[in-house]
Length: 381
Image 1: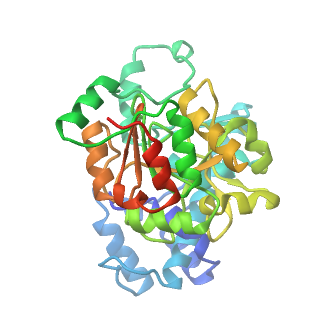
Image 2: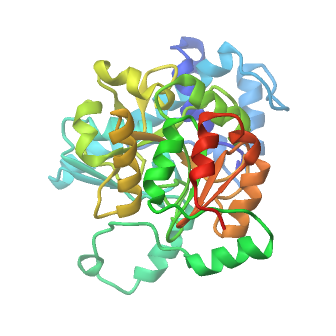
C-alpha cells in the first residue's frame, strides 16, 4: 500500500499463465461484476491481506527491493488478468443494462492503462473516458464541481491547472545563484536539436499538471528511437528498475501512423499496440515484454509549445515522437517550482534544463562534443 502498486501493471507482461497461482487467487477473491475481495482487504491497510497471501501461497513476502523471480512475474500477470476480467465485466454488464455504449472510469485503479485498453476494446463499448486525475488527488476536482449539475461541467480539455512562473522571476533566480544560462531565439528548435543529439532534457513550461502523468509541462524528455535512450533515463535520471517502460508523447496527427486502432489519448492513460513498421522508430517507449505503449497524443490547441517542440524534432529526425516521463527523481513528487527543477537537474543525470525561454546546460556534458559547439553558439547571460 502506497508503495508502488502500479508496478504490477508494468511487471505483468513479463509473466505467463500459471494455473496454480490462478486457482489460489480465485479461492481468495470473486471476480466479475459482483466481485468480492474483502477476504484480502477487510480493515485498513494491507497487512492482513499480505499475511493471508503468504499462507495461501506458502511463501513469504519479499521484504527488500530486488530482482523479481518468474513466480512473482506470473503472480503479477494473473493479478492483472483478474483485474481486467472484473472491470470489463462491470463495464459490459452496466452498458447492457442501461443501453449505452459510453463508459467513464475513475478511481485509482483507472490509472491502469492496460485495463483501460481492455475496456476500450470491448465490443459493447463505443467510447471510453478516463478521468486523468483518477486517484485521490482528483477529489479536488469533484469538490470544485460538487454544486453543479453534470451537464454544466465543461468538457475536460486540460489538467494544466497548477502554478506557473514568469520568465523574469526565473532569470532573477538564475542570476542570484550565479547559474549560467542561455536564451536562444527559438527555444523549441534548440531543445529539439539537443534531443536529436542524444541529450536528456528537463522541460519546464507553463502551468503544472494535475495528476500522476507529466504531459509536457513538467517533463523529462529523450530521443525515443533507441533502447539505450530508455536505459539511460532509467539508470541515470529516474534511478529505478530497468525493466520499467516509458511512455511517448506524439503528435495527434501522427497517431494513426504509429498506433493500431488509434484514438486521441491526451492524458497518457490508455495502452495501444504499435504498428510493426514503426516499432524501430520508438524502441525506447515500447514495453520490452509485449511491445505495447502508453501514448500521450498532443495537439497544437492543447499545448502549443510542446506541440512545436515535437514538430521540430520530427523535422530533424522524421519521428514525431518523444520519450516523456515525469520530472522527478525516484519516489519524489513531480517538480512544481523552478527551484525544484534546478535541484533535480543537478541531482540527476540530465544534460539540459529548459525553464520557459531559458536554457541551463551542464558544461561537463557538452565540452569536446558536437553539442559543445551548439552550446557555444547559445546566447549566454
